Length: 218
Image (cartoon, rainbow, N blue to C red; front, side, top):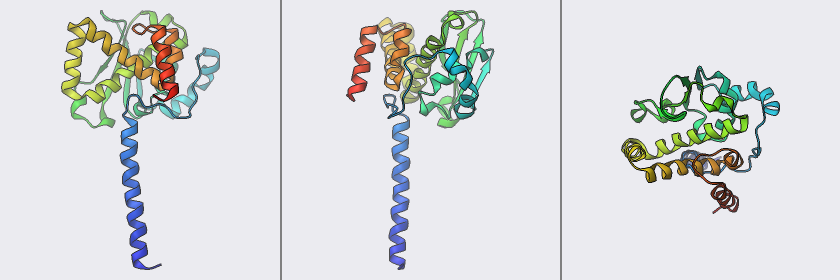
């Protein structure tokens, strides 16, 4: 092999690796990115999925922490399994006595100066809320909706997130648009059947339309 040939091979490998990194970065953070050929069930039931908790924990649960939310571990990891781009993030499931929404997506105030892997996202759940009494499938839907907000925050950046949250507080239309956007992200990550079982903001007819849109690739 000549030195020129070795140089060409090395250059080809180097550029292939660079293009691969660019491609994976683009795919990983597109909120409407579908899961390819991976198949997800239409319903998550306790009997089928509880025995798989250990394997889920080992595969995608190492960066998830719980503060009084251990009872939601199975639902959390099943919801997280739909979001490859979040599986290397630090996520906290916090159950506490609080007023306001029964469940909400939050984040560390330092997220905007941290690298993607250093960001900390939180799902805060009101102690004694309805979430603890729901079926596993509905818990997955509720948690997956909140995780979709993490993707929205990531894409909007610091100013965009602050503007969005201000609109959420002051405008009902902006709030509904933001919440439906999270539902759309969840649907395009194969959670449509779960949202048909439980969703606050998007009607069943709209969910089915989005599921058809995803299936057609549009």
